[in-house]
Length: 110
Figure 1 (cartoon, rainbow, N blue to C red):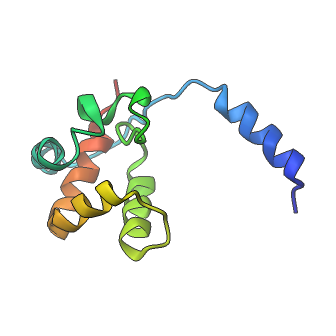
Figure 2: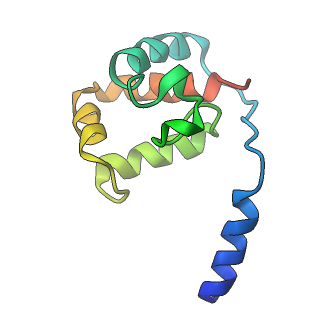
Figure 3: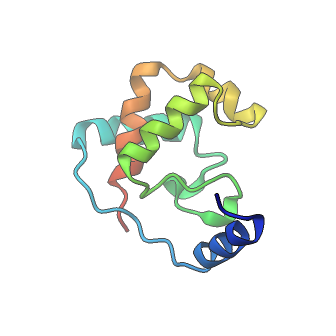
């Protein structure tokens, strides 16, 4: 039950916060495989392993693994908007490789 002004103020507050990558447990073997998946499908738009905010394509590196799983689920189900280029890439990625990609992004803590 927040007003539009409340939402703006909250967004403004969080937009000024420094991003801190999550330090979390991940599967090293899946992360290694996920790095290859990233390089093949994602690096063009999410450069330097998905660590560059200036790419204007989202910064998946260092996000919490449960958040990444939820985001991918929403992309695949159509609940989250996705640009055409990314949608095409998501359709190319083997669904089994998505968990590897999630572990790769979740492994980046620096």
